[in-house]
Amino acid sequence: MRPALIGRNPMRLEDIWQTLFLLPYYRSGSVHMSALSGVDMALWDIKGKVAGLPVYELLGGRARNRLLTYTSVGGRDFREVEEGARRMIERGYKVLKVQVRAPGLESGYAVPPSDSQRAATEKAHRAGVPPTETWEPGPYVRTLPKLFEHLRKTLGENIELLHDVHERITPSQALWLAKALEPYNLFFLEDPLRPEHLDTFRLIRQQSSIPIAMGEVWTGQWDGLFLITEHLIDYVRHDLCHCGGITTGKKIAAIAEPYGILTAWHGPSNISPVAQMANCHVSLSVPNFGIQECATNWSEAAREVFSTAPTFSQGYVDIHDEPGLGIAVNEKAAAKYPYLARHRPTIRRADDSAWAY
Image (cartoon, rainbow, N blue to C red):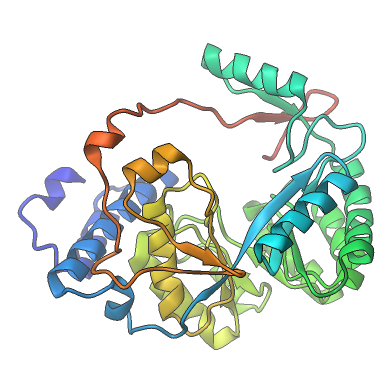
């Protein structure tokens, strides 16, 4: 991409986006779109700083004063999840994503690992190979409704709860789970099916009223279009770091708006404050905003490298009214922290066959 950028006018955002998108013959993959996303965010930052305006002003201005947010709570049993949820409620969170380990499994998605698993994971990383996690969908599917029953009894109905399946179950299991979770009034059920199974979302929609969110693995504005136009989801979850940046985020929101579908951009703790700020600028400006996942517990290293990040207060996040994205990167400080290589785990079933992460 670098040769195609040299000498171009950074104000011509759409032209540059289209040029970089159409540049490779084999386009739209995760590597291509992640690189394009980074360039796009940088160009919006430049445009805002030249104009002396925050990016959200260039996108149409604030449609709201703050953004409803949530954080994740995981535990190895129901009690751990409940205790973690209470701590987050005390901090002011109004919406929580909850995850739990299923009986007989060492771990689960977004669940604290055991000591032995943590040691094995570190050993694998040092060796430069992916760690291995064992997973069985059956125990997980049977356990999850019991977790929500427990949390509703102990926490009540005033806290919004959601859950991320992370695409780890079959279509029939996803349908069963969606129906089983209906009594607990989830904010949404996230990624119940793999992106290869888009046509099977119709099964859930036809037989369950649970709100569905999908999209963090999509790498473009065309991915998932079928789910939007067929009213098969309620929230779009694209990651603006991987789907084309701010330019694409604004387009996706516009596509979803006529169908009554809201935004819930992917914003976990493993994306930088720059990306979190980009998410917030788009979320502040679109009419069909739903919720913004946003990490707020940054490390001291991150605080040293990045000048700011979205600020949290009483269940909401906001950003300062600074030009561009409103964030600066201290490159000298960043040089003190070399890239720490980490591998995604390989997921194996009890019979040692591969399974979706």
